Image (cartoon, rainbow, N blue to C red; front, side, top):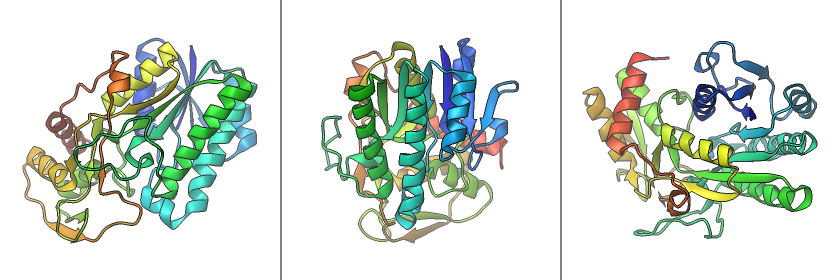
Length: 313
């Protein structure tokens, strides 16, 4: 296997890169370093500093490295930014993705793994329910619409060009190396702000002052395990990657504060545009292939908070 990891210097992508290298796989990274960091990568890994929106440069990377497999993690990941700037979101997540997809077809890639979203693509998930893959996509933000659109492209490319693919619909991924400076990644944001003694903001689920939206928080190591399964076994289709358990924003905050031994100062805000009230996934389809979420919520939060304590940026 020769695996090209787009967004490989980022949070999830860099964990995938490290794991692939540990398994003796030939790896290259494509990243524009707009949010990724070179220190996330092991020394000596082959890096192409390229933006997925640059079609010619993307094709040049494929011609140079000649990957057999692609792990497409590069993305604009902020829901709120997608609401503010839908064009940029689509330019990156749809058009940029198509550049990678076309290069993969031209280069004869055997299998393509796409980082999709389970946390946004289904829309509101009712209480006591868990979203399954066969649920219709009901995007409530441009970000979710772009991810759903790209899944349709993948299906078409399989039919028209024979490209084998896996779409992994992630829950809310958290863990070491997550970027605390953007608008996505509440565990990272809380960890950084609490360590600095700064107030934290809780966006409302229904009204200002409540516990905030409920999400399916999945630790990055479990997400990497799903990616390894998809790459190594070339498993076709669409799969949720989550725990099946929902936690509110305040539950996350309490867990981070407990791990750091601090008392947070909380600012309560209204509902953030594009946010859902509740999103919880059913990972049963992936579990049937032998995958499972192994990292407990409290343990994962504690491990993440400790990493930020030792690696403040």
